[in-house]
Length: 112
Length: 115
Image 1 (spheres, rainbow over the protein chains, first blue to last red):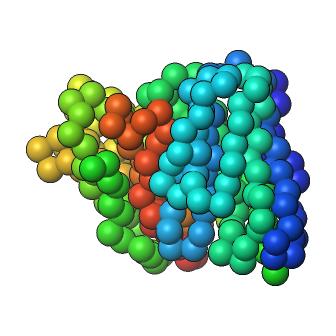
Image 2: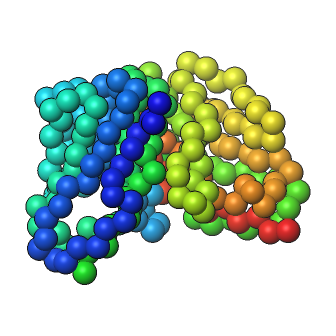
């Protein structure tokens, strides 16, 4: 049981480049989320999903797209990276709305 | 509005001191859940406790204890006899219907324990 996995662990992009942060879980959890963590800001919700084919916006969705074609995967896409998107990104999953969220190890993204 | 406030940005203590981390939440839901997570210097997020709104009993787990008070909308976390390994960022989080299905986190409290 790998839990929640994220790739890559580190990434450097130039402004305007696009990329996809990968997230996968093997616990058959319906609920998945993406957060970003910035110094002094805590974890802020970007997008979340309640099941395959269903996604919704969180607190800071601008500049990010998501899709959920399978229960296991929940990729986060940056279409045109900006320096303001420099952050640590965490993916999380849980079995139902009110239970513990399991977090991936995070992806540290730097946009130059 | 759903909100979690951790007013203490940073706390520094010496080993063996007791320390309390404060958490105040806002929600209009009558059913909600509160969580504490620990983020050590290595960066991963570690689940510590989950508490539902119908259970106001305090909980103790080793040196950790939690005080949930609905009257003051608080869910405080106390570490007794702190150790250097307790040094981390601690996050309080809220889960409720109004918050959607993801957790809403406070900004975190950085605890530094020196020897």
